[in-house]
Amino acid sequence: MLSSLIKEHQTKQAAKRVIQEQKRKECIAAANDLTQALVDHLNVGVAQAYLNQKKLDAEAKLLHQGAINFSKQTQQWLALVENFSSALKEIGDVENWARSIENDMKIVTDTLENAYKMAQEQPSSTQNNQ
Image 1 (cartoon, rainbow, N blue to C red):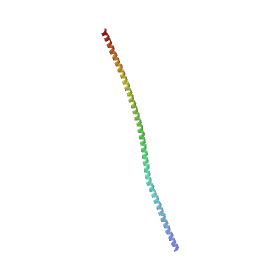
Image 2: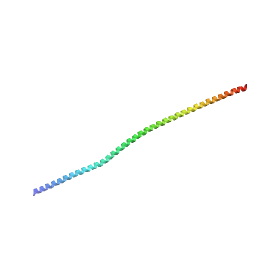
Image 3: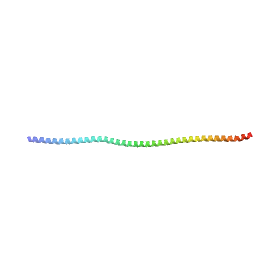
Image 4: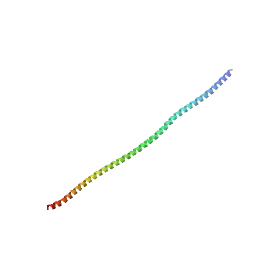
């Protein structure tokens, strides 16, 4: 009787151990599944942040390249405006020079005309006196 009770107790203990071992394995598997699900959920966020960062980097590079191109174009425009301004100054200088020459030529022309008129008047006045 005592030995049958011990055997029965040992059998029950063994059955409980088997059940307990199964529950422990199920618990470990559930914990692993939960951990994997949490990691996957976090990885989705991290992956999305990584993709967003890559897109931002690409956009920043494009923006930087656009700024460089804009700067080059601005420098070219400034050079063109500077050249145009210099050309206008030169035209102004040439115009002043031409006006000056024109005024000098008018003075010379007027002087020659006056001298010619005086030369024409002198012989006729000398002939009238004789």
